Length: 626
Image 1 (cartoon, rainbow, N blue to C red):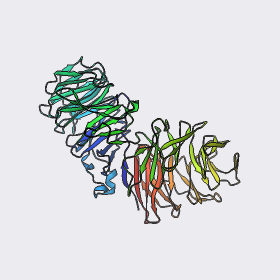
Image 2 (cartoon, rainbow, N blue to C red):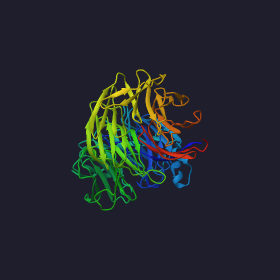
Image 3 (cartoon, helix red, strand yellow):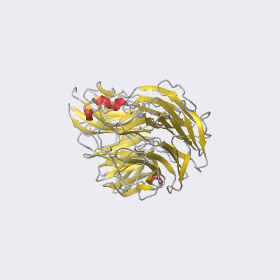
Image 4 (cartoon, one colour):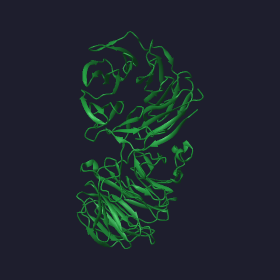
């Protein structure tokens, strides 16, 4: 009897305009690592791989950067509070069910080997030396902008000096004698000898704007820097002496640079929507990649890695673009959410998720999980501009509502029409052929894209649900539930009275057979009522310790799985209300949506959850004890 993790689907890298996101690649295990929110994600580079994704959740502040050690066995990650954590990533060597391991391995947190307070502001870049022993972390600070230290003891191994503004990137030469280089918003490159790392020279005058990235070539012969001034500058990798400049290399600022393994070429990523591959000796472009014909802000390229099989770039909208060979357009584009997921819906073949940024994604339901490559519904111009409140329907006929005060209607992923709302919706659902939109003190009914009527409420409503031809509305003012019938031009309250709750109700979940309604209150407690007479079935579903955000019934109305701000999953039984299945810390920051994918009475069930951490997870519940 348990709730076991089956698979995890991470959000996209969280990008910020005008800043490089330093992606890190592990060639030993062919995987990448990046931050999103307070989490760090390690995922296989191959977008179609079934190797489990891992999530590190031990940062208390927003994570800003993560970098593999050359061995691939450790990751150094930094956050916006200037803290760096060194943790063991060797545990992530595919020990999950896809490789014959234990389900529990998927969510097992790696051990933190060491953690240090490095700066007074955000960490922007981290570099390891080839011995996997020394680390340099740089970023924004007060008395200093970088620090070099040993990963295990934190002992200082020199000083990072020479800049007057935030350091944006750092690199360490792979060969002895070691050298290091940093670049900054002060338009300079500083070269260091070491270890211990000591200031050698400051190279100025070749960049005219903020320098975004710097990399040593794999053979140590070259050093290259790129910046917002659209300029590429090459230096001698052993001495730091200036060699040459490539001006107007792109039509927009350059955010990232990455070397090919043979050190004869490097690639650059730019705000002009393109990736260019350069021959280091001649300074000529040997290959150009174009992410999209549209040079929109969302298509600016802010991250880059050259891997074994692909050149992978990161768009400002979070897309990971996979280029291969001499084909100009991407072979794969990995899309998805890069912020909190706020809503979910599931059909027989698809799962749909909506985010706080307005993005709506579709996931194909595979044999035992989801397709790891999600597809976006609509385009950036047709989706909601912010928080998606609810998703209804299936891939043929989808209805969504958002905080841009609109209901949108979709057919096979394409926008068919929309309706402007008077206010910000709190909840949207279907009752037969009608679409019900609940506002704080108003309820509107729509049919065929047209408003039938609006009905003012004399209380603050928090949630609504349909029971056959009736409506139930949660009243947070009087801590109760009202029942209505739908008339031709309004609502008619029935004589049925639900007992008053101890706290304000937050959500209502009616069972598929219409026999029960589970009412959750602001304290995280459920009261299960019988809808026919409003009698109380049980009040023992009381294991959440904060607000409940969503819940889902099994098809036979026997079980309810619930999630909320306390990050826990709880599976309640109607027949045995005292017995509950628990899964604490299922999602960092909270569980925001739940839907069942499969269910076998008295055997097992499979459901999908989404969270405020931007993650989609699939779970299996063992129900054999009931």
